[in-house]
Structure formats: C-alpha cells, structure tokens
Amino acid sequence: MKPVYNIALLFSLFLFSCNSEPTLQKYFVENTENKNFVALDVSPDILNVDQTKLTLEQKAALQSFDKMNVLAFKLNDTNKVQFEIERAKVNLILKDKKYQQLMKFGSGKEGASVSCVGSDEHIEEFVFFANKKETGFAIVRVLGKDMNLTNIITMISVLQKSNVDLEQLKPLQEMFRK
Picture (cartoon, rainbow, N blue to C red):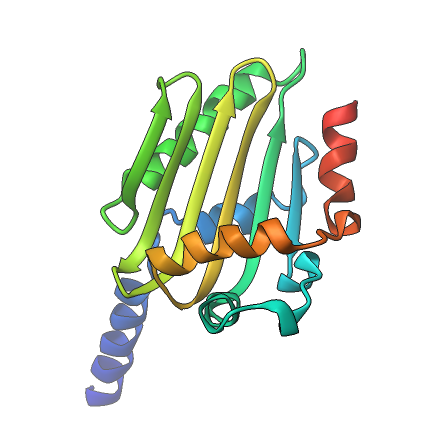
C-alpha cells in the first residue's frame, strides 16, 4: 500500500507544481505560429555598436541586455474580434503583480505601457506594450541579467550611437506595409 501512496503523493505534487497562470512567455510561445501575429527575436547584435567608442557605463548596460522578443498583432477587417480578445489577454497578463507598471500613456483603447519584472537593481525583463485600435498592438520584452533603470536610460544613449541592423526587423516592417 505504501508504494501506491508515494506515487499518488508524487503525482499530486507534480500537478500542483505546474503553473497554469498566464505569462507573457507562454503567450509568446502560444502565438508565435498564429497568422495574425509576427514574432521576432532580436539579439544585441542588431545595434552594430563600435565597442571601443562606448563608456564603461554603456558597456555595462549593453552586457546586461540579452535579447528582445517582439510579438505584434496586425489588425485587419477580418480579425477585429480576435484583436479585442488578444488585447484583453495581454492586459490581463500585465495586471499580474509580477509585472510592475512603471509608466502608462493614453487610454485603455489606445496607448502604451512600460512594466518590469524584478527588483530595482535586478530587473529581469522590461515589457513595452503599445496598442492602437486602427492598426493592432505590439509587445516588446527586453530580457537581461541584473538590468536596472539606469541601464535602460544608458541603452538609449547607446541606441543613438548605433547603426541598427534593420535586416532583423524586416518581418515586422513587411507586416505593417500590407
């Protein structure tokens, strides 16, 4: 009888340990192949920055950045209902206490928000969510190691000095041309 009890206990622990809560990572994975979405993974190489011209702070900020995931929903005449459903899903995910909202612009129907995951000095993820009822929405996840707000501000100065490789963004550009 004991082996059956142990197996039942292990199985129940396994079931309870599975996290069924929605997360942006799960949302990205679920929608990567969806025809209404364009998904991109962008590496730091997109910046094409001359490392020798960067300050120590800029190099540290760049090293804290791992990659960006972009997921964009292109609105058209046939997917308006799906757009509202998907936008509501994203808003629900971002209301989780895990995502700390830093800024919000616009209204509930249009606008943008910036959120983060992690503590002030150890941010794992920045999330930019922008939506417009005429065109669609985009979610950008900036993933890194021990990022902080100073790193993000410093990254903006690095972006100004960069020669962005637009080849990595071609699928996104093509989506919004159609």
